[in-house]
Image (cartoon, rainbow, N blue to C red; front, side, top):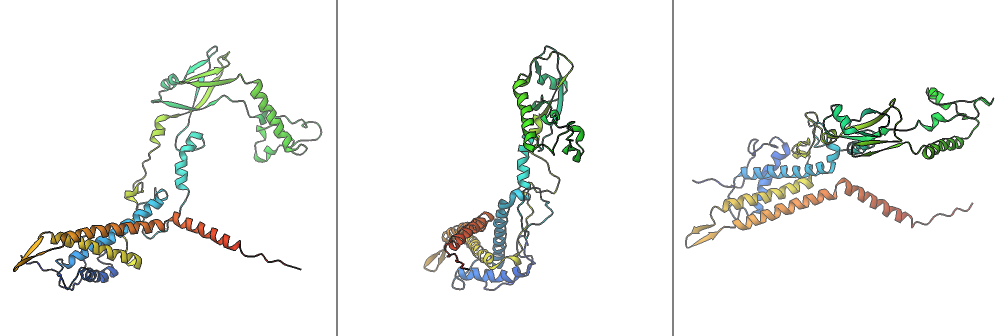
Length: 381
């Protein structure tokens, strides 16, 4: 079967590439035939035949553009992944400017808020257990079973605290004729605090008085306490009546595990595979990117031609035979592809956000050092 090979000219039409990603891009249509001519001349045409057809060049050209876009957007995803998690997949980010935000930091820091009891994604529950006279130890595991709580619980806080010192503070000037005024009245909290004279006494006096009350509780009431060991709550001293309850906050440990993974709504990016990037728009790729694409296309064409020529290692001719350069083409193709990928990745590393900030910091240091050598003007009036 006599299959025609490259004749030296071609005319691209939409539908001649494997996937048709860029077939209707005006710049792609103009460059497709130019790239075919570029590759064949680099391979020795017209001095040697090129055993390929135009569609082989178009396929390599399309693959080179897609590879360039994959490397570019994969780097964009790596550089901005924490900021992109949760974004709608219906949004195309190809030409978007990604502005860093604190939402990823807040999402990560929720675990600390959960443990500190100041927020997070784990629910805090409140429970209580009645105190019984002469009973010092209380099994909270049994309490959880009696309450029908499945799995283990973790006690986060036991409410065995004295009232705040400020509610036990009494203003010595109240009723002495000097008058009093409560700052809390301005916020509607007047019923929560006794009269405190903010007019006649300095603030440091109030602070010292509150510290004295707290120190009194620490020393004189130090025997009123509790401890937690192996799910058992021990009360000090031993209760002498059965009229009170001990309150506590707890979490269910199963929710801590479940809280590690949340199921977002459909259409939300949650990993690198569904980040909303598409194939690049060839028209928008600048000359730097296009030159890389041309060279990568040539490497792919070498690979295709090497595979084609590998069908026949030696071709007999009258009185001798011709040895084809299949292995040389395959070796060069592999080397060129690796070199170009490494070159592109290095370029992306050098132009990343982190590298840009480091250059700006270095420029600022150099400028400061340069300006520090400028002599100061002495003004004589």
